[in-house]
Length: 281
Ligand SMILES: O=C(O)CCC(=O)C(=O)O
Image 1 (cartoon, helix red, strand yellow):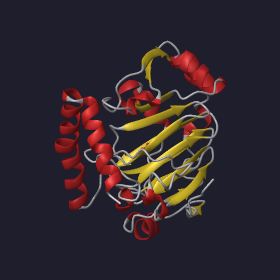
Image 2: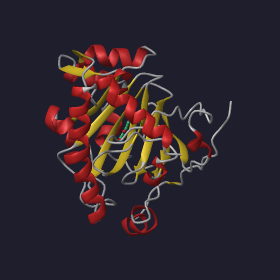
Image 3: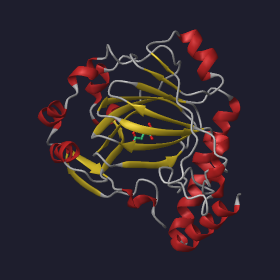
């Protein structure tokens, strides 16, 4: 099986704001910070039993990977089940069933009090505090965050392998136009079908329980759930004008066009995007 030549992500126990800004935030370099979340109440309190006991009756939307297939819009729903049943599924089953972009600020606002917002990243949103859950074997397929936010992603349970690539690598990843997605199988790279992968430059890291990964603005990311896992992502909008304009353009122009075309001609539109993605190399 051919392998990609990827770099490890730098890792520190803790970091001061100035060093973080100069060495990682401004140059857009990813970083793992081992102890950033150590003092958060969430780190010890948010066990599977806690979620089941406190919020088990809540209905939650869960997704498999079918929403990435032709004609499906991003986040088209798979099904609704109780949080209790979902947590049981996460910890006991091996299947591709995820809950993602679960905004605790709007769904369970009191949970936000269990997080200490880190001072290394200025302007973290208090309104978009997203959780991601998945069974062992789940995969979050390669994408970049459409609004070009910076992300601090903390694994609170289980561990995941993360692949990361700077925005400019979209060509080598055969990203689909009008979307923030790529359909390469980064774990089993097929250099015949996706020749760009021969030149791709990026990172691979195993994110253990409690560790925080800094994902710089625009980075492509692909997550593999090595264990049942849940995590929280804190987000901060891009602070450069180009980043802000890029994010607004993606959200207000590209994404609505993609949604419209998915309605008009799901298969035809998907085929056209696929052709373009394969042509880009
Ligand atoms: O944890 C995951 O499954 C995906 C996380 C992600 O895409 C993000 O934090 O932006």
